[in-house]
Length: 77
Image (cartoon, rainbow, N blue to C red; front, side):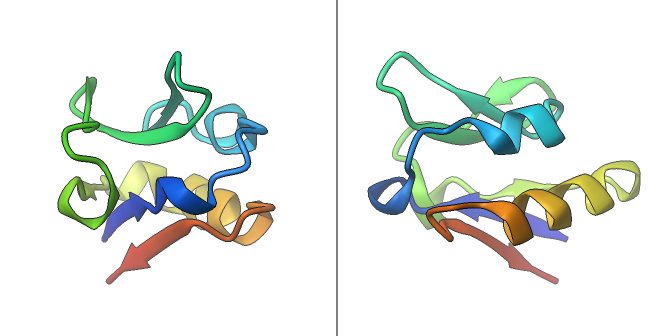
């Protein structure tokens, strides 16, 4: 599984980080980004900053995508 966030639709409510902090984080710009191996993938962000998700985090990523108010979390299987 891979995941990315479309920052132009991010509402900044940070629910994704609360649900799965190993994969999501919010930066000083108020938007959420994905992380891979602890590194924030914010350059350039969006689909070009897609993170691989370990099996242990798949449920959290799916829950974050389902509950995202901005519908900006995209999962690719």
